[in-house]
Length: 229
Image 1 (cartoon, one colour):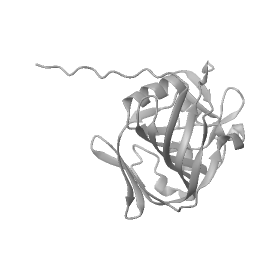
Image 2 (image 1 turned 135 degrees about the vertical axis):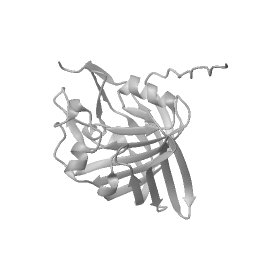
Image 3 (image 1 turned 180 degrees about the vertical axis):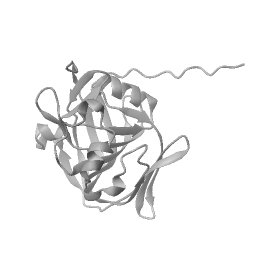
């Protein structure tokens, strides 16, 4: 009997340089969804700032140290970390690459998991994203945008807005990606989620959506410390 060879995972330590496109959506969501329906790790429960805002992102990486891949993530707000600061934290994230999963966990403690993506740009004027696992679709998103390009750079934003924190395998990771590129106004026209797999953001109201038409991003090395006992 022939046995399939185990998949080899690319070792890609930080920093990473990435290029691509995507959408960012700011949402107003029920507190119960943000606190209890967003897959927040137990070590961060009760530490979220009382805010009704969360952030959904779909990213299409055309280039990265592990090759092209897609990504869907949710940030339910900011949390108090052991350094005494509040940091935004990714609570749920799926990517189309096992290399991205393994290196994302190693380098930044990002809780990545693998899923399959079906992305169709310009489908009847919409950009459609479908994400599935084991043949079951758990996320459907339809985006639109308008051709009014504007430049952006994270260098113009306060560090507190662009610094993230994660708890992973008894460690704390603090990291600050930097990026520059072009954005234009967008909208999230429709969405559907399976709450057993991804936060049910159909309960939320989109407040602001932008399409990032192109970006250059650097994920710098994280500061890593053991979780306090």
